[in-house]
Image 1 (cartoon, rainbow, N blue to C red):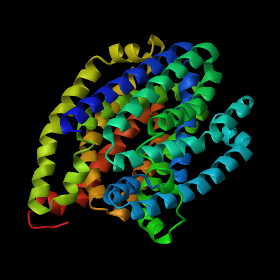
Image 2 (cartoon, rainbow, N blue to C red; image 1 turned 135 degrees about the vertical axis):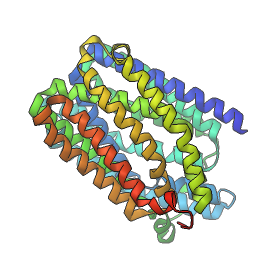
Image 3 (cartoon, rainbow, N blue to C red; image 1 turned 120 degrees about the vertical axis):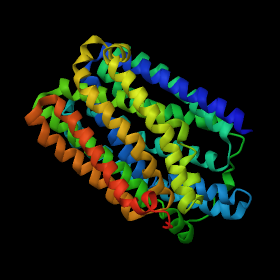
Image 4 (spheres, one colour; image 1 turned 180 degrees about the vertical axis):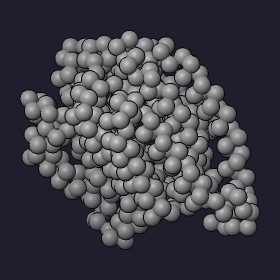
Length: 418
């Protein structure tokens, strides 16, 4: 499959996913309101944590080693059987603990103790969620891009249709059922596509191999720390907003965060497959030149797009949500400014990943999360609800400054090799 056809399919997938996401947001805003966004935010971040742990942070490693050994069946089997055994064991443990402590976990996340039964369904769905994500990484490593994209599109469409029906008929209860059901739908769609090929049962019949496990684990720490740090921070901030301002404002902030995520995704998706492999093979002046060439594109585009969103923010808010959510209009100015800085800081973040600066990556992730949380709890009492958007902006200004200082020799001096 050539690059052009892959790009077309990938573009179609992105448009479909974004369209369905916007429609789902609209349904949540109309039929559930602010509480729905607050609860969904907490539950989704819980699932992100369990997925990262269940996968053991192997995601990038799976793509790398499957791609490397796809023409070597014996070596490929060692990796895949090791992945399957280790992830199956840890996922069973995580799902079991989530079921056993379901009441306590749900109470901490949402205070909705009456929904414990539905949360148990979400906990059980951790297993198919991990298998689906890992299988998609394997397809990526095998360069089965057409199948990868088709599975993504079909599962996304089916899951979104179920989400709309469940939210419409069952409101908040439908959110819980949907988050569990969507993992099963994804897994079933995957099985239908890979039933005959390219997967083979004998890939998973090998024993566990320590050597391959250690190689895969090289990627674990950055992936696990990155995901868990962000998710824990967002959960903590939602709980703080809820305690200070109430559930409605927690939902408003989650809706702001989603709108911010759409803005960032639209502007960074074009570079997602380009930066890591490009940065990995470039050094010194060529790398420096590449960074500045990318900034020449991202800076004016992000500022222009940000200005449009800020100027027409009330229109975009009512389009995606309802007039009730115009509460976030004053916050969107600071949030979008933060996103503009984040997008251009993200370029240097990919450089850290490309050069495998593990300690720096972990330090930056933890440092930004702590900064954002501390600023949030400090500014909300002083500035009110808008304080959290101001905290977001300041945290990314500091992040961008740190990244420039860290790479100052590369960016501002020409004789340094990293």
